[in-house]
Image (cartoon, one colour):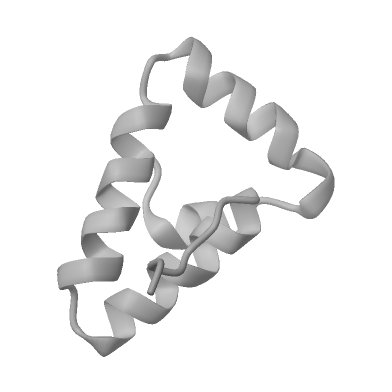
Length: 65
């Protein structure tokens, strides 16, 4: 499974293909769950990286008030 830094290294033009490959491999859900867990429970550095990775993938990274 790709790390958060792996996700951030994917070029913008390749995001759709990356998501498609993760979905085909049935790892996309686990990947997003892991990023959400890092966003909620990680230290500040982990939270920042997870938020950046979620944004890079096109997902919302903020909690609702």
